[in-house]
Image (cartoon, rainbow, N blue to C red; front, top):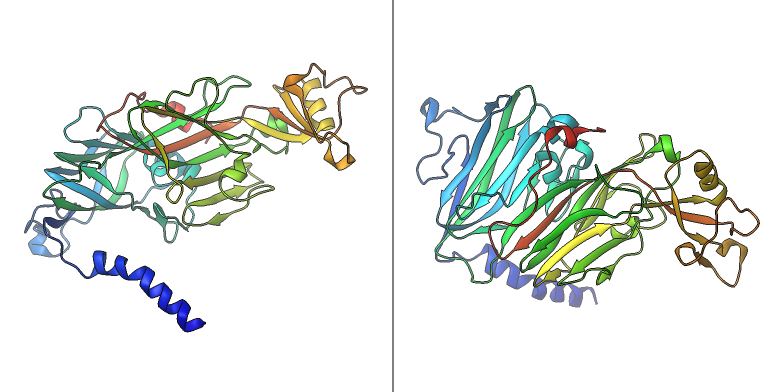
Length: 401
């Protein structure tokens, strides 16, 4: 039986090795861009200091932008690696990464560096996923393939009021004769809920127009313990509005921790397509990710991704919040511990005052609330630019950190 299993495994893996590792395909040329060869040109690397480690890093001054990649022709960015001396949460939100494809004037990616590389809330930990990795909590790695037909330009900008003493990077890419006709462009969008109201969903990805694929997101949550104490924040469901959906989505999850593949709360774990890098109950901070690689989410006209801002606690706790004037809106009560015939009372369909102890059911009460949400959405689109708003200003990005 063991021999049969090994044979089957070899047969499954053989096409991968034969096609990707052992062949030398025509029309492809490897390029690396770094400070030792910022253009990635053939025969142009390591020219300074007579070839002896002459330009491994740069200083990135306050307000300065540095072009990390600027190539012409067709190709695919295969890997981005980066590290720097200052990796505190505010700096990681202050460094902006912009990516332009095929000469577009608007970036397809304009995201804080930390959030782009899957570092929720700027809190560095070692982790490994299919798209991003940080081997020891000191660096940034992206493995997302990013195709381009006419050219690619990647720029980093320091919007902080102090310089980054040492910035290292390399961008590994392939030069191609041409791309497949159905190859789409990579995009990313950063968001936070500065201006949402009670009962409104948090937009992970505002409505983007075109044909494409939602690749997934990482999120960071700072729970409002002043208003809601130690109650659980993560009952909100992910909602996906696809191809003309308006009032109601085509896809809905069942809860926040459910979306990343776990349940009954959220601890730390790191897997290929889902994980939680920060689960700090003392500081009331959580950072997590979900990447739709084995379960693709395609759209043909438009796509909008949101999550409900809903938490839960016992009825008495929620009643105390209401009495104290805290912003809450009860939506359901689970009375299953009492073994009642009706397990879930849907409060939005009824008119029951939570302060009415006689008629209001007692149990686990889910309620709309307002916490500090941030997210980075990753997606492919059939064009090099998009219709999304620009990156929020620095003061909005760092507020609450």
